[in-house]
Length: 474
Image (cartoon, rainbow, N blue to C red; front, side, top):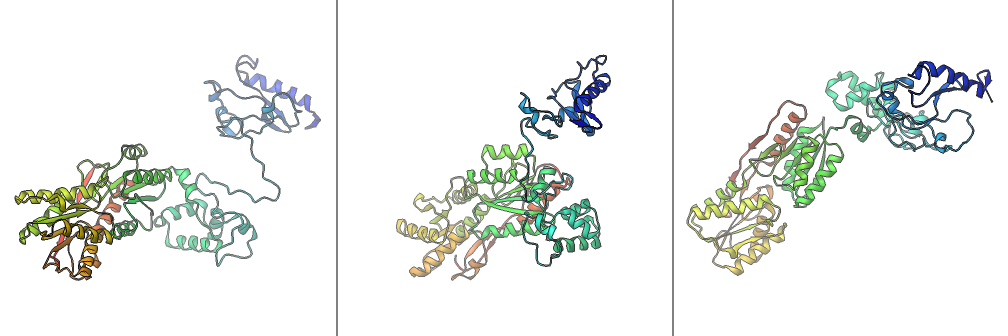
């Protein structure tokens, strides 16, 4: 076999002679170096596995790379098969698997998206996807392999790094540059690969929010408040815990695996694993829905104990003495537990006895409130008032009383919490506790951004309070 004007064997002998002297490290013997570089077809190639030693790892290999970064084995071009099967595998720089060969693309198969470590770009859409409306129909190559950041940069007349910066933070580029980039994105149909960017930076611009339920409308205000502050610089992912600590733990684990930059949790009680995951990840976390003296990071909300105490005191002040209490199940729900504690504290302050027969837990939903009212009326017909700590529960009780012909507040007074527009329009309109859920969401998002950007540090507890909205039902 002829190589560079001579036979292959002669080329190897000359390469060995040339390499022994400068690289051997022990007087040209070659023993100080774990393997030899051989020259074939004009390229240096590795014939044996390099062992990682203090001496070898300090020397530089081809293209300035450390030998410790070259994990696999190069087969010398044209070398006939031998007993060392591993010598037939191509070297993959930086690979952690010393036996993994580089995969070959089948003939005619679409080219896999390439990942740019600097910009986090792996190609915007899957190969073969149709371009967006308005895309240039005369760009078959872009349509075949999927639009890339480089296509956007070329069309906009800027660098790929400028496109990356504009996508991450539009405020740092000039309005004219941003306009050209956005127009180019629409033209080529580019969709940023957020996951690739997360991998390259170990963080994202995504915030994870966990609420107890997506079916309960009262959490919508908090979600909206968070979203209004985060846009346009941050994206929001929302998950529900199902009112369980294990559900919250699963949601937090999923968010952290997506490399979110921060968390908002509608809870101040957590499993030990949830706390550990957040501490290890080192991401900012804002807890809402209640107050605690020992937050993971920062807490924004109101005191459920004080809110329930205030509403119970109102009923007592209006002359009611036999008062029932209904909440969601207390298990893994610190908010419901604290509201019951506030009710019992106010009754004790007034010297009134709490009848356990009219202190109930009800499942969420309108039917839960109606059934709770029926149970209280059956167990203790003398009950004068009922405090239902939930907007849906209280509304369900009002609607059930109307159907059954019960005079509210003539026969029994009904009050609720978590005031919303519906409670204002039922008949009779419902006296309720109003919590600033929208403001809580906005405050939580602002604090989170300050944490992410390093503008604030240290633990904090923010109490935004509550109000009693007086209406007709008591």
